[in-house]
Length: 279
Image: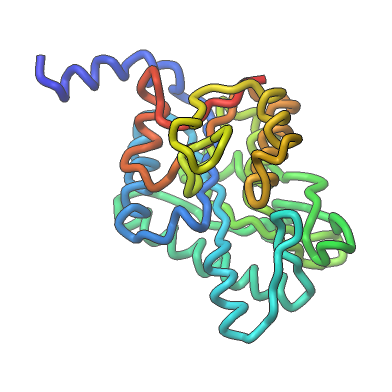
């Protein structure tokens, strides 16, 4: 049996497992910086969709937001891993995210896929309120209008979602993409949430490769945060993972979106390539 045939045969149980299941994938802004790798990720997403999975792509855009803020000479800072946001910053962030969103949709179309791009503002998809005055117009999600996403899936389209939020007064909020992905996964009762980032997964002593963890229970992950071995931008990811698990997901995966075919290896092989976080 050829190597290709062997791989296809071994992937069959996993193809059957995820057939018709919803998988929410969060694509991090930093993991999108390499254009060649971005095209590889989108090709994997299309392959997953054509294999019978219902794929929902949720994306951030940290570097794109930073770029537009610098262009307009708007100062920005991070507090506990979240970008402090005023009204102007929130609107500029939405502008950057929507531009990136349509770029991803166009790239998917060029690959032969079908996708509909939307932001959390559209149809009040992501309803939010102010998280804290400490963060300005950073939103705490109060509701996900999952019916909009489900309707797109029923049309055999891939929803590609930019993570801004809005309240009933029309105020725009910057919403952390990891947080949004976890809420969307919970609202859709997804089979799995996968967080693509620019790190391989969880480390007990980052960046020491020997401390990489293939599987971990959430209470163990929480202990790493308490001992300050996980900090900064990883904190929102840990909180997002906690939310998804508490809302009924059995497992969440954190993996490096810069690894070629990372999604296929994670979903269709026994070992995977990232960190599996379990309840």
